Length: 353
Image: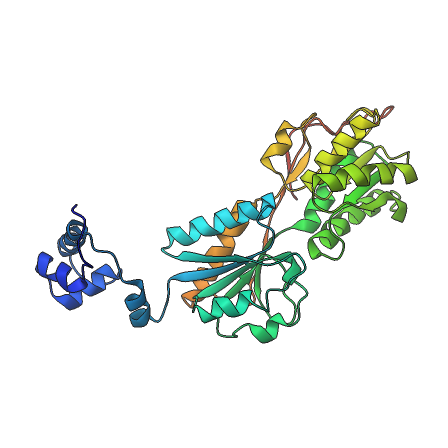
């Protein structure tokens, strides 16, 4: 294929292939009812000439930009990064590009991110920023005709959502610890106020209640989402409740901090204290000891959210869909029965019920 010295037009491709301009244009735009041989001739001519589609002209004709806006929170968050990878690859597979921006931890996105996306005439928007979930101003800023899918709840408007079953995640992690014989189970929660945190905490309390086990406020410590939160939160929890024999961490990175903190104070894992995480990060398999966790399929969540959004763009899916993706427990060596108990919290991975 030779490199073009000027912009190659549809007219050039039509002349090279010997097919009419109208038919050539339809084929190059992904349509046209033509024979396989004619389509192949047109595409071969386009390749030979180095034809590159004029996206601006195509947008004017098709009334679409083939671009999706994506507004995200913290790019450094490993779960979010996996979700974005799934969304981007699904968009690319379907021939769409992404216009990507992030918002500040305390921002809402209504000041600049959303207006900027709509000004650029994106075909739809994927929201992946937890800090936007309670912003009631969103319902006034969003164009009601613009397809929107969110990975988090959005207040004030019936926005389609795709998310993990976070209540079940909290439940199966806690149930796993209880099943192993633990009766004083502490919890290092995520960021207070986020629905993800509330859902995982609801699952934790539900498992305790079903087992007839104490659910006390002094067993709960807010630790955020990172390693530093676990390092600081675990000692605070044990200072109040030294009888804790197992800890459920809302996030794997917090669990990594908790493992480090336990080693620092001379406690063995799992002999003196079991630790279970949640998120299912790849690195959880390589901690010391390997971390029991609840696998959240972040990549699949992002891909499914993009599929739903593009269905909406094509007019094939109504607004307001709620997709809940199942989670799975992966039991590893960081959890075991407490001293003196006959049961075992170890075993093969168990799927969410």
